Length: 104
Image (cartoon, rainbow, N blue to C red; front, side, top):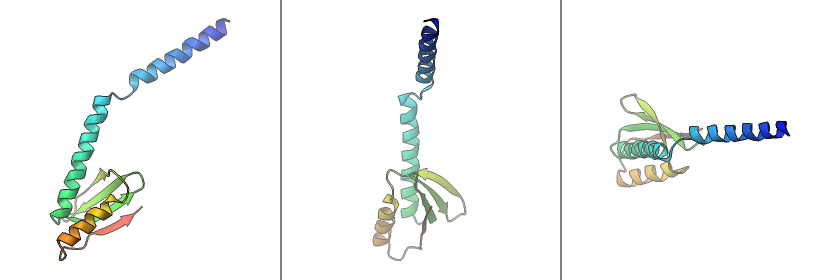
């Protein structure tokens, strides 16, 4: 009986610690806003002709390489959406420089 009570108390402590250490919703929203800002920046840079290559990963992230040699990672809202954006970019700018796209 003492073992069972101790076991139940241990489980309650573990669940309580897990609940306390979970990320708060406002933190997730702030991170989401940051990712959205980076995604919006990526779209803007594509349309400005500043992007030379994009690598898309299966975990909904991309690596963006810029003309100046710098690069950064960003999150994407859905897989393959980058293809739609690049297609739209080339329809609006048929003479635009080539953007290399790769999948990993």
